[in-house]
Length: 293
Image (cartoon, rainbow, N blue to C red; front, side, top):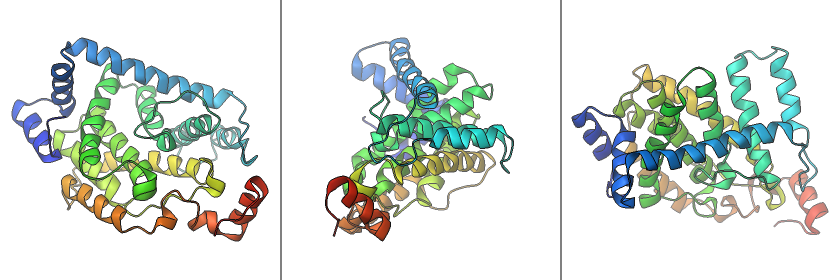
């Protein structure tokens, strides 16, 4: 993408009195030498796959490599359907959707990596709950361009790879993307979309990647769930008028700094964090015949 900063995206959209997604769609259409309609139709296909992964993740029986938490979606879905949750049914819907897609990925189901497979549950959970709350599918699909446009700045400056920046790079980026999309869906201004993105990522700096035994199951599914909920809360804060003190572009620079300074034990190596707990090592030894050191 030709845009080199989030600030320039926000400024351009604000000057033209359009959404960030409109700017990104035009850039993509020009780059692909295609029409806006064709670009949007292609993105709509990606969204449909996301929706399918939510449905399939909820109905299919998980058979995780670790043998842990196979009933996780059924357990939380039953809890929220019984109306036992303090935060209500919407949060329950987000939780079960994020867990369903993340678990579906762990069992080799078809997902959309947004931006990575390890963080694939975040965007579908946030976007589908927005559509289920009555927002138009067309607006939901368009918001994905805003998410992609802001994410492109991360790609240019920092990283999406857990092996380089920990889970901050994966679930952190996914949450920022989802939050900016959610803010636009809710009618937020370009600046509010950027603030939602910044608020989300700024509180996820330093999130480590510590998969037990190296499998994208524990604690990956939990991180997808929390990231999705966090994304919506940040979007609501931004749309309420709460500003990010640190501009979005500077938050991305901070991501780069934190990722570069993070110990390798916390970058997808399964050598630290939860993977290096006594229980984590026992599980790894059982599955792999060795203990991480």
